Image (cartoon, rainbow, N blue to C red; front, top):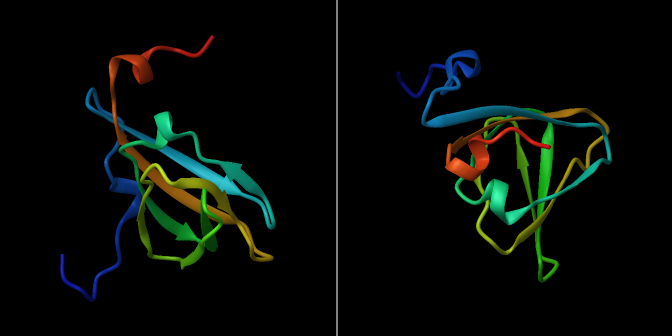
Length: 103
């Protein structure tokens, strides 16, 4: 892949025994609390829109389409601060705890 080629999100780390792929969609002005356990080793690709990360100390940074993010423990909130929907592709390692079905 060269720098001029676009990233193919549809092929990006499909679900396997070792990795989990999930899609996170945020409506305009929607906030999502970042649970440090489920986001601990996640890498997120901003596929559409723009998002803002907010740390526990209140510091904020915006990231647009094409950005690659990780979520260290001080991140507390993911926010779509634009008037357009935002979509992230999130890849994380599977662990025993995260592999169990919810409920």
